[in-house]
Amino acid sequence: MLANDRNLFRVFLITAAVFVSWIALLTRAAIEVPESNAAVNAAQRADGLAAWNQVYSVLTSPRCINCHTATNYPQQGDDRHRHFANVIRGAAGKGVPALNCVSCHQHTNADSTGVPGGPDWHLAPLSMRWQDMNDQPLSSAAVCRAVTDRSRNENMDGPALLKHHEEAALVLWAWNPGRRPDGTARTAPPLTHAEFVAATRRWVDAGTPCPKGR
Amino acid sequence: MATFQLTVNGQRKEVDVDASTPLLWVLREDLKMTGTKYGCGISACGACTVHVDGVATRSCVVPVSLIGNRPIVTIEGVAQDPMGRKVQDAWVEKDVVQCGYCQSGQIMSAVALLKANPKPTDQNIEESMGGNLCRCATYVRIREAIKSASQQLT
Image (tube, rainbow over all chains, first blue to last red; front, side):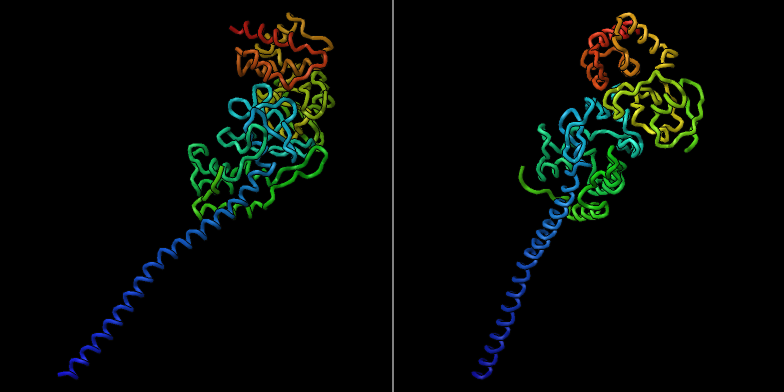
């Protein structure tokens, strides 16, 4: 009987050890799963923010931001000076009667006279201003909030933003900006259009994360 | 060189010019319509303003190749339009002109303004006419003439 009891006790101990080990493994696994998701989420967000920084570098380049002003006028040139000839925004962002954007800017670039052009040349709406009233670019966080706010961005979600960056005529113009009046080529944004679209796609795939801060 | 068919003041015209030639020089040199003036050549002064498909357009910076089939109206033809006639009459009534060099552009811009906004405020006038420069500084009389023409529209 004693031998049987010892054997039973050994079996019990082994079973208990196996059970405890199994529980411990399960518990560890249970703890590790959310840690893994968090790590993935953090990595995805970091990648999305890195992609956004690339997008931001394009949006704040002169070819884009010159028509995303907060003021009553567009800008021009790489130094982003106020548009000459007393050009003003007008109610619809298309200038005013007798001085519309299309009074000079035709449907395509006029390289012989140095006037840039594209379909329906106009200013971005004030809801899409990416500058302050002193003509300084807003922070990355502020521009990101504006771009992702569907009450301000013509109700565009992530895929719509991607499509806008891929296809909108005046977006595409930035990579075909024509020649200045002196015949030299206008500066293009810091990324190629393909790189810009790829960065936008990464940012959208990551859930359009925005940097924290003002 | 290329051939372009233009409609100017209701008449069909054919010109054989370099595609990059600004509309201003096609009007003045090829069609001998010298009412439209060359001022700055960079769209900064408004002396070259004509209407292209009803839009006040700076003809000195628009290559003729970009006009397409849009109709053109110049100072020579603007009086064919009742609004244009009223504005020109108001210009005479208020004796706006001093040296006169910029005035064809001023009138073309004023007509475009009144067609879009028959009852412009002083601010509307200043904004819309702000791109038309006058070295004789006839701005006060220009504003009076626009208001006079506006009153005659009722």
